[in-house]
Amino acid sequence: MLAAVLAAALWWRRNPSACPYSQRFWVEAPHPLITRERLRDVLAPRSGEAILELGPGTGYYSLELAGWVAPDGRIELFDIQQEMLDHVMRRAAERGVANLSPTRGDAASLPYPDSSVDAVVLTTVLGEIADRRSAMAEIARVLRPGGRLVVGELFGDPHFTTPAEVERLGAEAGLVLESRSGPWFGSFSRLVKPG
Ligand SMILES: C[S@@+](CC[C@H](N)C(=O)[O-])C[C@H]1O[C@@H](n2cnc3c(N)ncnc32)[C@H](O)[C@@H]1O
Image 1 (tube, rainbow, N blue to C red):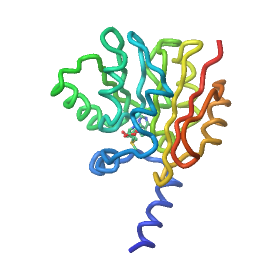
Image 2: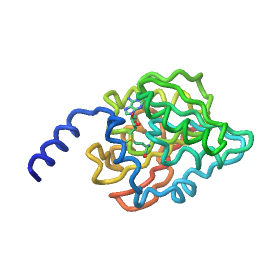
Image 3: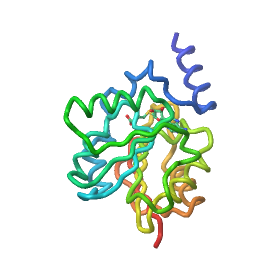
Image 4: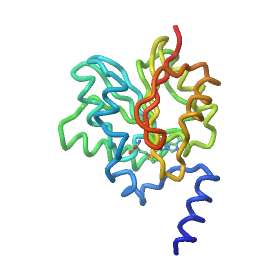
């Protein structure tokens, strides 16, 4: 049994693909180390900002993000699975949160204008993206100069991306590592777009 689970995890790691909506219990579980409080500290969101959350899943961070930039700020939600977006929007409607806009697509090609967002948040998503280089280049394109990218990663996720790999992928896209919060096995990296 254990061997089967390990084999499945290894296969998944070598074949980047989105965590299916049917297995959403993984993303609804508590996220130790990469907590909402730590995300807030690292991201330092301000009221009025436009923030892109790439791969929100069922919205573990989304409603808090929306609250942090309220009342005039907005959160763009972007996910490859419509079911994930619908799930977050249902939760937002139930709680009367209105400053979220969902868009479906692949992170390798973002439908937002150049320099149009203040920050991008990407938590346990990078390793699922088949074309990570293109996704990073797209993130760098849509960030305004001085904008920041926060990447959360947690060991145990079959698609765990090491902090060194996050830094390397960011550097290839012209993003500079500014700080890291948390231990190697559960951290948020903050990168900035120079300028
Ligand atoms: C493991 S879940 C993480 C969800 C959430 N960020 C969290 O930490 O709870 C990864 C999410 O990224 C999305 N995703 C995977 N590949 C993607 C891609 N190429 N483009 C956009 N979203 C993608 C998945 O559909 C899923 O919602």
